[in-house]
Image (tube, rainbow, N blue to C red; front, top):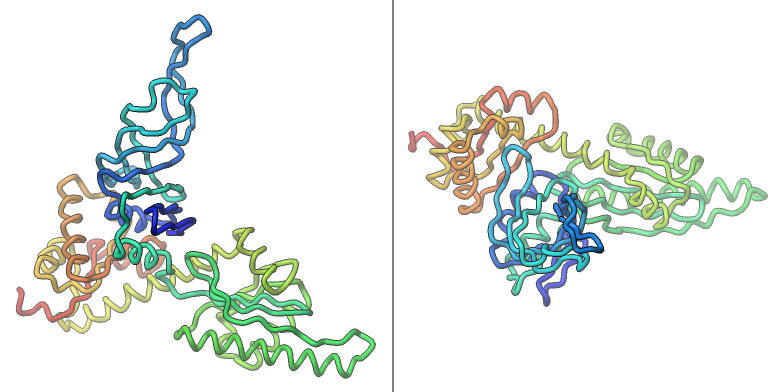
Length: 364
């Protein structure tokens, strides 16, 4: 999820939906009585100059609804927001005051307007916008400057800016010394950022040809343990302008996807390790996890998106209750969507895995 605009005083939040988990969270956030503005398609009958009604046509338009109900469409993987139209383009007669359904899908941009937005709702929104996956370290470098940042769900967080003092080509000896100093300073800032995040995040180096490549060579030599975590992204310049260019082009999105696949695999394997140990701290299969969720002992619930298509209406209602039980007791729910070997293992165990707070032996 990405917040494009948030005004806590007026209760307005403009949001872009980025994955299926966002739809589930919006289902909780949007309540009856709220206003939702979105781009949608509506059948409209137009009148001729003589007042005759023409055959209806479908028109794209921006509508604002006063929400009556919100439900997750298990077949279309979308959120269906139903309500009365309170604002519509004037040229379309009969739309304002009528009922309409807005279908919110991955990629949709909607604006939610609440009479009052509570502090816990703001915190939930902000938490959802912080990447649930390992952050990506960005190094935007050219001859003149370098910027180090962390790529997150809402954009990037700048960590360091370093100016070079590299002389012109006429002073070759001084140039080599300054290039070495510049690379050393940038590498130190990169490692400071990596260490502050923990783990082994991806390190994406971007910028024009020579300096990008020479820094990668230097960094890989000094820190060989991270050489397999380095990725390359082309940009026409370094520094903040290079970061902005990479974000605009969308070229960084594949690295977020790569991190997601890795993170999801780690989550699944961690739970499977407990299954293999027979420690009682993990469970799998719909019925078993459903029962344990009702006791409030599920710490982490992993749900395969592949399983969703197989659920009937009763199955969906049971899944809703399971999720509410887990979240109601402070647990975390994650939908697994990346096609990985670990995901195949999850599907083979019924599409649901749970990590437990306490051993389940006393609950069986």
